[in-house]
Length: 72
Image 1 (cartoon, helix red, strand yellow):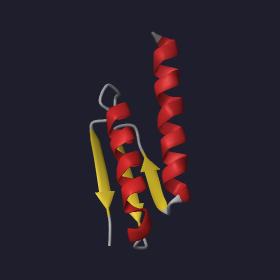
Image 2 (cartoon, one colour):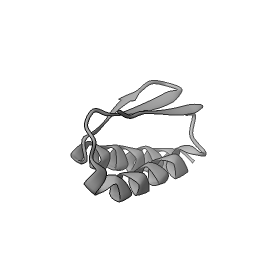
Image 3 (cartoon, one colour):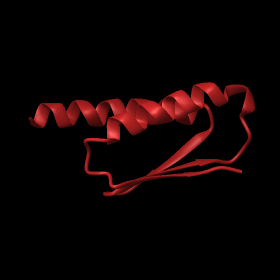
Image 4 (cartoon, helix red, strand yellow):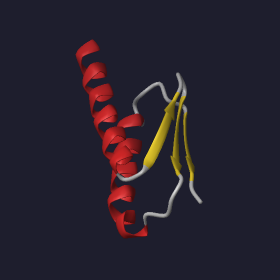
């Protein structure tokens, strides 16, 4: 069971790193993930939306109770 948890965390970190490449910054605490976009990346909105969907899917079974997105 511990192995599954480690794999979930690795996937979340990979997705967060991909989001960072698109200019989406993250703040992670014990119970929530905050995503912040400081600039408008309308050209890459579909990719960002897909990655956020992947992240939310991965956090469904985790200890995170809340995901927050802040955009301009």
